[in-house]
Image (cartoon, rainbow, N blue to C red; front, side, top):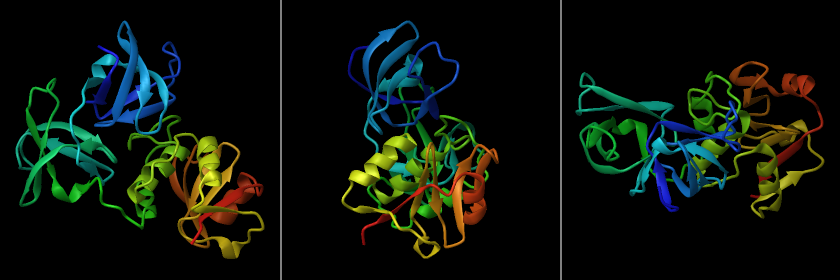
Length: 260
């Protein structure tokens, strides 16, 4: 492959900072753009256009880039060979996958598939997608949709997530691209004039959409009593009482809110 722009053609593709690692550092999702710098054997090294994360990815998960105009808004959706739930299943796509919708008719969206696939087109229920330009102010509800998804270090696919990818994926529905790792996310919010770091916080400051950062962990406030996070302790994305989480993790945290 040449050193140019490509696109993910699998539901998700593991990305590693070091090729020989058995564990992943993150994942790239279907339709996301990836620029290749160079290729060695079965792997290509490059950068994800989604969050500027660099690393190695299997070359067979990439194809030349094509336009995308919608994203998957459900936890995951099935791509079918025909606009019929009884037709042949092609593959699934996780939340925030980017797709090229050709037309929408009745309940189905017709999408163009990569050249490497034996099908030229596939069909997705239109209720499971959104225009990629459609901004949702209630981005937290997309985090709530992912409740009970298993915890997976480095995971961005909705079959397994970590804490920072839960925030990254759900915040994207608000039209905002944020960094991949929690430490970089905290730096991003601190530097962004649209956000405030609350230094003298209190329970009265717990509002839906506020974000709590600990060292190496992040959670999203649902209401004055509850938060949601991808928890290694619980092994899944879980809604938990804020006070219980603070007692278990640490009361030394930083609270971020939008500067309204």
